[in-house]
Length: 200
Length: 373
Image (cartoon, rainbow over all chains, first blue to last red; front, side, top):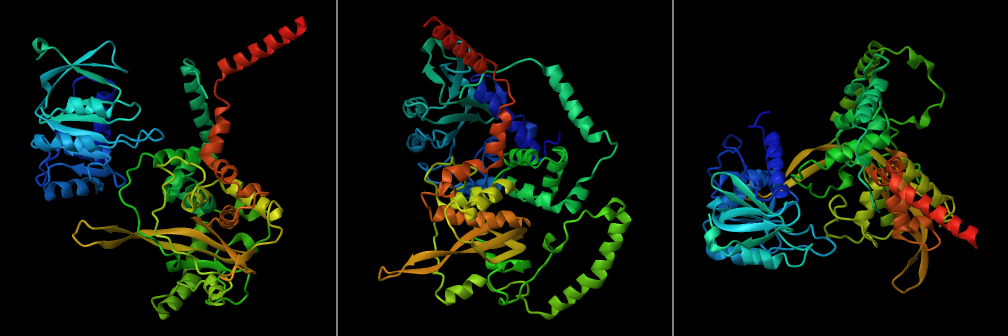
């Protein structure tokens, strides 16, 4: 199948995202040959491919880069409309704004009891989803426990825990690093920091 | 409702699928998608309308795959539709901009712009045409060439002589509005609900009702529309103010270029109906007077019975009468949808072994208890 074709490529990326959501902690990576270059964008090309996969004209997206060029590139690539953090269906949290990331994710919508699916998916850029602070994940789809490591330091775990207190309300998170590695944390997954000595 | 997953039978299912394909191919012939598009236009229109996906080619493909079963074809096309990205939403289309191909009114003989019969089976004898047994592709092509040479060319020359507004005709309803017999509509800029992304809850809104009616099953919409007219509610006969078939231009707006501009992206064929209903209306001094109410129907393709019935049902739900089943939006909207109703009926074929066993156990236990009394 031709990886240069957006339709086939985004179908493959969707399968990868699905794997990552269904098997928390499993190593999933978007291969380099499936990633195009986006010179007008400050977010990583792998993140842009994920946005092209998940977004369409019916979705509202918030992008924390703050630069107009990146937002316009996202709009051109996905047809999504721009939205405030509190109203967005997807929030893109870039790696270089740790000081603002927390307040944006705190605003993310968690859905309603009738429509829990009307919640936000938070896409977080980080330095690595293979190395960093170690966590233990438990919950549906995980046999026993799954160990993960994330290099992302703006306190995402505490905000995520608060947002996901009232299941089925909550947010789903997808971490993406510069190498195109993906780590998904659906709202059903419980994440606890591992003891210091266990850190990777 | 609880379901129990059933495993096994993979080989039998594989064989059943092969047999289904054999059933289509055993005549040793295959009808091509272009043939379905050309020869079965009304069926293609019906499937596009019920699927709410305007693509004659894909509708024809679904019809071929479903071996002509419209409900199955609609199911296939709706499933395909659900996988498509939503790139743009069209701007509001004013249907008075329709390029009219057919247009009739059963309320006035002389209407501004005149009646245009267009293509219709209404004026044909319903007798089997045995000549079609012998019709070949060559015959069809010969007729096509002759018709295009002798008639369409003349029509084209006539149109060229007309102004740029050719094909755009004034509405019959505007005449009645000018006479104060039909009140001016209250314009609403409220964004319509999208029934394909939001669950249906009652009471619904007019935009929801119109969307569900327009993709309702042709037979179901027609049957319920007739039930309404026959006496479940109104005791009088509605009149078709205007029935139009033609092409509607569609545009999208984008502000990516810096200024909000509209772009023409193509056209869809549609049938539009405005129907007149006698009704009591309140005047400003609270006196009630007899006036004319309006029902509205619009669907993809040429699907006249459905568009007329839709306008009747739309009126019935917009002006509810408690004695009238067709004013009950839950009764109408949940039952006319092809996937909703055909899907539920078809699911009865799925294994219900556990639930039925449980029913049998209950019956046996109760009988046993009764025999002890």
